[in-house]
Each structure stands twice: as structure tokens, then as C-alpha cells.
Image (cartoon, rainbow, N blue to C red; front, side, top):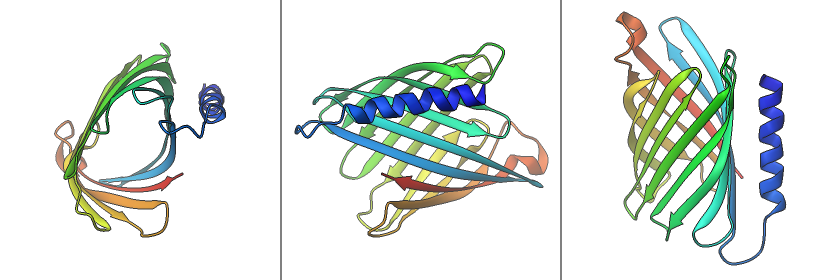
Length: 194
């Protein structure tokens, strides 16, 4: 299933980039992010990747892939944008589960001072969510707050390395779904933007 997910997502990525155009309203984005979760005496590694392409001022498409040692999922679908301040999307795909159908949706709000991302997913393995509010400081450092299923709530501190495509972010989290010391977690992410 993992190989199928990777092949499926690679085909989506190739199809998006083959549609790239030099027209004014076309824009492509691709990022890869490695995450490390520190919890109690465990370390969990994961890889996330996103590709998106706008076809005109309002419509585009995206594909997302998430993989770790125990699980993988990928989905893609259309996006709709209103100017530069709002983008939303809904996608369908597969996950590594007995019931492999997987879906996800997102809303992204962007203004001069902050960004807000809300993501919801559902599939055979259950539901997942993430909400991320980031303050734009105009510098190499951005503070924020994040709520994510299986991580909890925490501070999200981001460092943008000048003149590179690299972002490093992380922070402490408290997961109300866990008990004892396992509820306290740390997260470190490294993202490459292309």
C-alpha cells in the first residue's frame, strides 16, 4: 500500500507540473517537510509533502502525501481562491488501512499580519485535524500557535533561513488525549520549499 501511495502521489505531482504555464495567474508550489516528534521515551519520524498549482485567478489543484513508519496516505483535489486572502480545497485519495478511502479539506486565510490554516481529514483509520495560526513579523522569525490531533496544542516557532528555501520550526505541545508524561511532546520540522 505504501508503494502504491507513493506512485499515486508522484503521478499527481508530475501532472501538476506538466500543466505549468507562464501566464500571469498560474503559480506552482511544492514543499517537502520532515518532522520529528519527541514524546516520553519515543521519537517518531514522518514526511509530508504538498504540491499545488493554480490554473487561473480562482481555480487550482493540490496533492498531499503523509508517510511515517506505520502509516501512509495521499489525496488530491481542486482548490478555490478569492484574491490573495482565501484559499480552500477538498480532496480524495487513499490511505494505508483496511478501508483505504481517505478525504481531506482545508481553508487558508492570509492577510498582512497573520495566516490561519485549518485542515480536516477522514478515512478508514479515523479523523485528523490541524489548526495553525501564524503571526507575520516581516523578519526571519514567526511565532504562532498550533492544535493538531495526536500532538495537542502548543507554540509553533518558525525560523526562515534568509536566501534559502529552508524553514525550521517547532515547539512544545500538550496532548490532552494522552496520560501522564506521554502528554508532553516536542515537535521539530524542517521544510524545503521549491
